[in-house]
Length: 391
Image 1 (cartoon, rainbow, N blue to C red):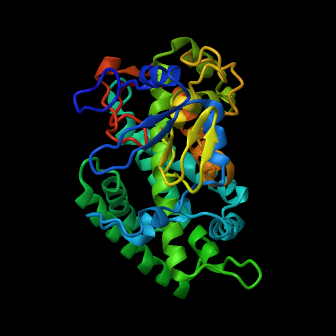
Image 2: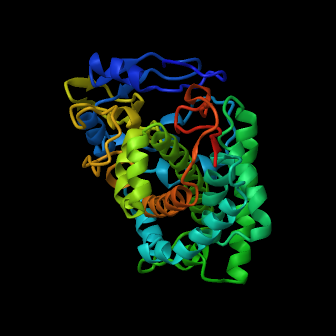
Image 3: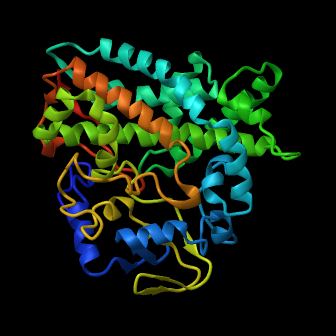
């Protein structure tokens, strides 16, 4: 990737994506150290096809069965609903969808607003703040903990574990955090069974589809998925969106003048710099043709969502942030049966937070040159480590 930052992570991967895509929207990639050779998808049409093709399995347990690995991730974290195929995935998704309703998200809007205002009250007017540490991280952690029913006293520890789960280059820390999170959630499920309330975790415990219900292992796994995914996507989306606007003053001025337009601007902001850079693991269970490329059975297929969202064949002038663009077809939340279940919640948080930031701090600007912004060092998600701003 071009222009590496001081920590070796990509500042702007999109020129490199364009170079790969110019050679073909689907390319064979060699194996890295300890990895597996596979295929990288950077074209929009091919990515959309891959995300919905049932021949590309997400059953990681099946792919890695019998292969030695030094990793010791807790099964509740390693084998979530994201790592399953139909019919198991269909069953889990149906049960979760019954509890994860749009009404639950709508009911959270006052809490999201209150939490946002409380965090922004701490920002010094005319001083410096870190948009990531002071808003983009604590807001979604507080919201997903509130939604799940994690007690307020436990949220700081849960946030630390969540951070550890994405510690780049530290597999031991990641594995340890996975066991800590799973152990905590196992105890929380047991406690909520004894003293139920009206949180999402309580609704998951009570979820039924005829005689079907979630067992204990499934409850812990789903809670872990919601906890981690509910934090990471929104954190990176907020950081990416604010940075994109600060670097595009004309578009920023438009939203400042018309904050009601923020809700519709989210699709273009998500397309322009996707918080999830690469979709989670898939592999071919039989030969698959993506575009003009024949992919054999039994190989990993990486779908670069960020690259697909910058495909000029789907989005003309893709490197231009254009809030007039019809960008609703972006793949930032995925596509098909695995499309992000928490997308409505992420959008609600982003809309409320961006409106508050832009209206309360009309002079907001970067506190450092754009080329000094440090980025997350991970292939899966994309977002700034920190974003110093002047208020």
